[in-house]
Length: 417
Image (cartoon, rainbow, N blue to C red; front, side, top):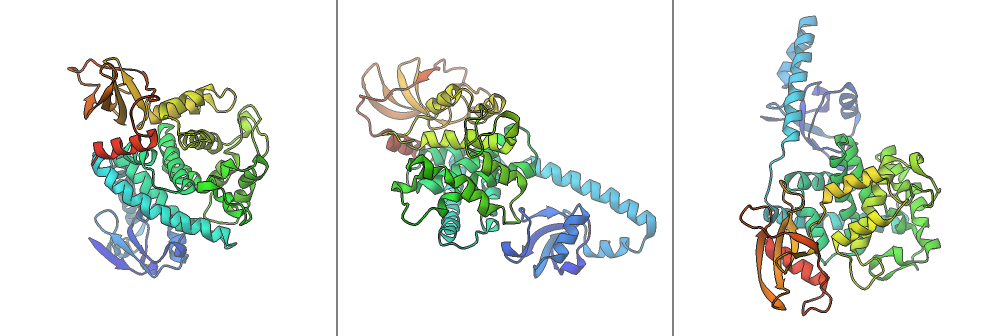
């Protein structure tokens, strides 16, 4: 049962379902949570919210709070036992997200991207106009991406790799945020660190907003600027973020270190190995991978599987253990990879296969033996009756096919419509 109560009636063990106010009125990342720590209770009662809505089916009711406060030590013991039971139930709920098909989640993810891009654009514009940025205004984006990945681990990633219509800087921020969340989960980081990882991904390039207004690269890709100018975005962003109380040290370090290298040849400080934060090591991999997928200064975007090969070849750049975890998180053949099958068919990976990492779901569209396009159809490489397999990435050059970026988009959206 939902019940609206004033802040003064809040007590330990209550489950907050909704906070009646804006994101500026409180410091919490989650909109729904259990009051399981005295610090949470004190923070809630001292913030600027008008009131909160509690869910009595997941936590304590107001009447229960009044009774236990007058019941002495026995009531306190009972309350502590009840609080532990509530935390166990809530923890179990959070660990079991409701799964969704890739097709269904793609629709949700597209709406998420549209909304998130608008919020990111507002934040970057505010920074460019010299106004103070508010990280709290984009924090809900991270929770939305996190929830989408938990419902379906590939839909959001696939959509962002295969969808063309999005300005580079905002698409890059959303992609890296999602990659950071997936990597954090693969590394078994805490929920707080996972959310921080997603937030860091959103904010890595906020420093580009502090360049002079005369700096306006094509399609918003600041990495194409003179390196002496481009490299300044790291410290410009860090300088702005450190004045926002909503940004944790974990996020600050990740943003400051995301261009450092394990061998000490990165920037801005030339750190090496153990001097680089875990978040910085993660961000370096996720940022570079997505950069390789988005033209990377070349005539066409790299295939995701080929981008992974380049990451492996960059000796001294990345933490090898975290890189292995990253490859596990995206798969040996990530969604959007063009592949060649043993049968002579060419296809694109459109979804993962949880039971067989090397046998993803492939949408075939070309037959090398016949030298022509064929009607798109799905091949489930993990099925026992289909003995076909991926033998390499596909080289589409010289074939009568649309541009790879466009082909990637139409195949993915057609497969999941």
